[in-house]
Image 1 (cartoon, one colour):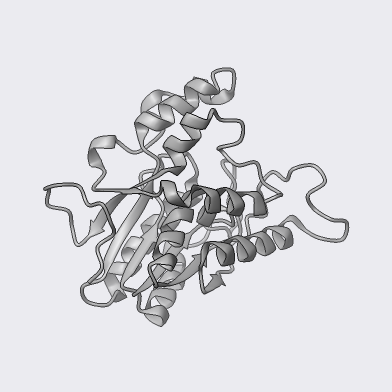
Image 2 (cartoon, rainbow, N blue to C red; image 1 turned 90 degrees about the vertical axis):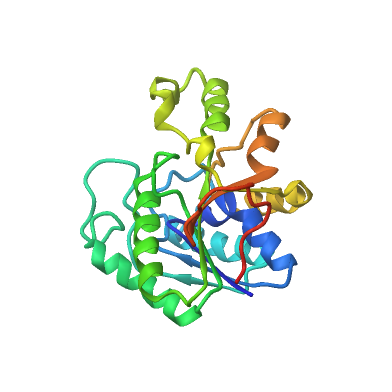
Length: 253
């Protein structure tokens, strides 16, 4: 089985889909990570970027190290720039580039790898980052154009119920001012719930490799961190979900 994980920035593969990668790799799958940008507009932790290095270089190194630890066979990097959370987008950024160009880049990756399963981020914007929406939208279009017959497409999601707890924990931050329904994917729309508690130690190791970035799980109470990291929640987009009992594993043709 081959899995292609399509993300926007270095750290998405770990902070987001880390246990998806690790579970598939442990089960014998060949996992490839396709990352659209180098995350150069991320906020670096003090002292994490050596003199003479750019944040983009550091983040690419972190991406390769974390993906390898999780079990990915290789990483492919696209040439788009980070769009940042808000403000104007550079023409070459993931959001500023022509949508068809983003689709074409992802299409090439899918055509080259011919995966049985594609996993990307939440196209509804449940975590607030516009690059995540763009890469998920582009991946969906590209998948429909060139994915092998019988392949599956999943969106990895942060669910609303857990995100509300996260916002409440950070009640003094700017996130507390965001309407509740703007964060997280509706719980009732989830199709696939996978218990990954056995992968927690590996997931924390991979998170620690992204030294330049503050993870969204930093300083969370153990119970809340486990609510994020101990369960993967996904939406199966292809083949289209028609109802029934929730999946407890990703569909493999």
